[in-house]
Length: 250
Image 1 (cartoon, one colour):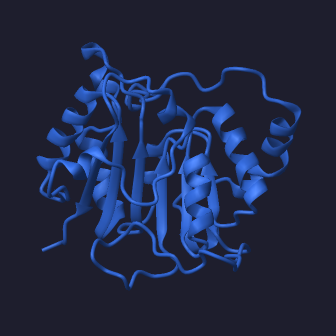
Image 2 (cartoon, helix red, strand yellow):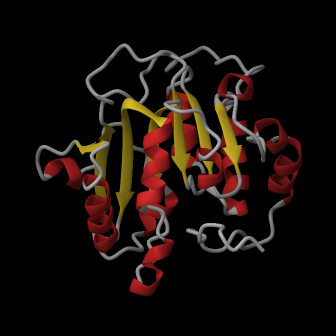
């Protein structure tokens, strides 16, 4: 066992037995969408062979580059912990020219996402069923135009706070892979985790909190798609929505 491997930031990876259709998609579709398990990630190669389909939403901008409408149509967005995939697939379907990488360790969630991908014919998504930090560590510098972290495992007990995803070393890696001007969007329904995230991120000069009024963190950003997890209201407060921008490199 690797004594230096980071603490796991997520809970169980499988619950109920997969339904036959889900199991079939895990075998037939996932291999074509999976991020390689090892080695540096070549983004162009990862998405080669799957040209963005046409139709409505083909030119919609990604979440990246606040105030900049000249974003490349081949922007790259990462969603960490996509749950059942509702949000990920909805975003990818609305922005057919944007490339999305979704990461989720919970196998039932991956199977659910594959069903949504098949039904939406979304060709601009790639998946990793594991730890997001493994993917981020292998992405090129300044390759991400946006990052979503929606309702991550809160680890509410103080003794478990070290397992939370938002940590200084994680922000180091995010800062490396996010382009200047790219947005990090974080949501939680646990008050302490919101405070924790604000404290950690605003202390880092490489990120800027974009809120201008209380309404900016009380209401979801435009285009948000409610997930099943969010609808369950398992936290101790109403959802808190935080937007940060990767500061320009000076």
